[in-house]
Image (cartoon, rainbow, N blue to C red):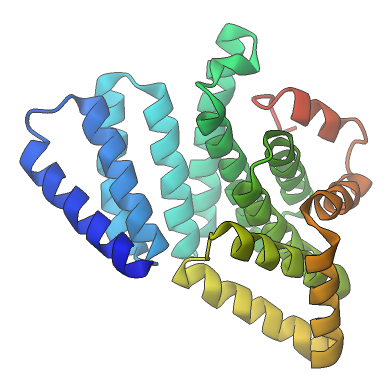
Length: 268
């Protein structure tokens, strides 16, 4: 699979070099985001970042708010891969502000142009939640991850749900709940394997470091058993458990409103 991504990345980059001068800014911006996505999947955040910055420039030139939001979301992921969590949080918040503005103008979640944008929104909220986990802002992490999981669940977006669930597992581990964290990681692992969505090299390194700490805390046999429990529980049940846990210290009605209003303000 990595070979296919390398070929796609090279082919797309060559096309961009040939066509950037004659293509519309919006088309070039979208192609740059795609090329950056291939680079991020390969773990090459240093190559992805300038592609995303160029995409942001082209989208702004075209007046394409959707493209601006997608580029900012990608920059947030690139910053997370580079362990620049402050920048990751800031770019994710910028992207979410644009999604909110687009929705508010039309007074409806239908302002998002199909489930593709909603999936990007779920991923962006997951990225924001992960940045907040790593910055130690537990309250903001809970809000963002609950929103990401609620939206992904409503869309039946399994990849996006697995991504947010992994971040929630990291939050659970940081909150002193290793057993919960291992179960959720087991579920996310099973989902990724079933849908064919492997982690990038950076994500694999980070998740293995987390699991090493959890195995040390619980013991290898116990961790293996808990991971199996998570895999067997299924995504819907595990997301439900995660949402209940995330809202435990938040506002009880907030998660439900996030699911019905996917562009609502989650910063409060």
